[in-house]
Length: 150
Image (tube, rainbow, N blue to C red; front, side):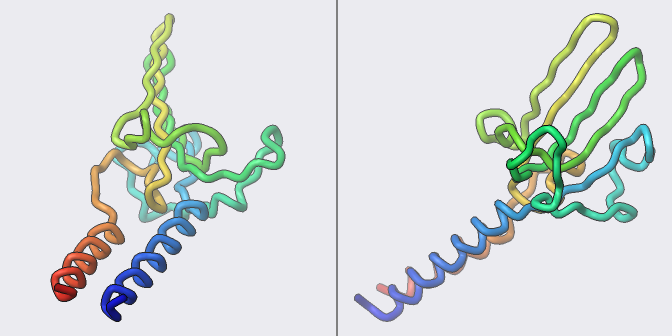
């Protein structure tokens, strides 16, 4: 096996290990707009600190570790409230696509949007579509190394 190919394989394994580690040890914004109006959208995260989700505990879900971020936007009788926190259960986005949230409506002027994600720390801020810097760097490095192998 060529030396450059060995380095490429080693770099790929290290990057995958780092990406998997960061996915399980996620940090999320933790706030409620009914307590602090700055938690609403548009969200200004400069005044909040993130919560390290493995330290986030639940009185009801004993033994589970929070591995997702969650954002809930709800309207009850015309009043909007926003909740951001770590989450224990759920699937990121809808069918794995974090750009989409689960929406529910009910009688008596009730609306709820429930978003979950685990793509990066603080992914429960406002709805933004962004590329993972790790993915971009890995793609560029792989392309450059493969080009030089030939």
